[in-house]
Length: 243
Ligand code: ADP
Image (cartoon, rainbow, N blue to C red; front, side, top):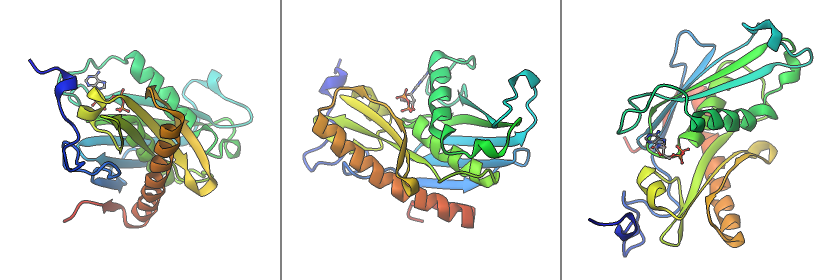
């Protein structure tokens, strides 16, 4: 049986297994106002990865003991639907989902103007409908759109993307196949309009030069994603896919 390391994921022309060049992201689509019963909502796709975000608030927290006197309480729940993965995922929250909920919350903590809404709660629910790598960065992108759609004041829009290293090459927007065999995975989220990085993780090993180059690749893509978010907020739906 072929080992994962035997599989070639960059061909002789420098193309990836799905035909993309190293600095190419998957086709992206964004839509807002996809749910009637949330204050703001968005559906974001990066290739086959499909993530829904629903935002409620600012509203009175259900548990009053959680009230913060000087700012809004921000809560995030990242959840993968049981049908989102090839093997049915247990619907019970996993350690990974608890960690990602925290990481995504931290990506917005200094972005949302929580001081404007003391004694309230803002809830972000993330539902991964289909997982094919990059769900946390798609989740941040969807949450940014859903927050804006809910009219919640923010310092700037946020978007995210991961850079990976496969067979020694830095690649943008890793999918699940690449994530499974790659040497490193570096998810980044940022608010380029205020020059702020709000999420940065590194799984695997990269040199200092690779981290710098990878960060530049991610930030350049994030600028484009934020422009797509702005367009989505005006037009409700945008796609980079050729139609
Ligand atoms: P991200 O989705 O942000 O890249 P990970 O690197 O942890 O986060 O996961 C990479 C991919 O692995 C996911 O997008 C998904 O396709 C797959 N995956 C993660 N958790 C599970 C799981 N519990 N069951 C099946 N596939 C999973």
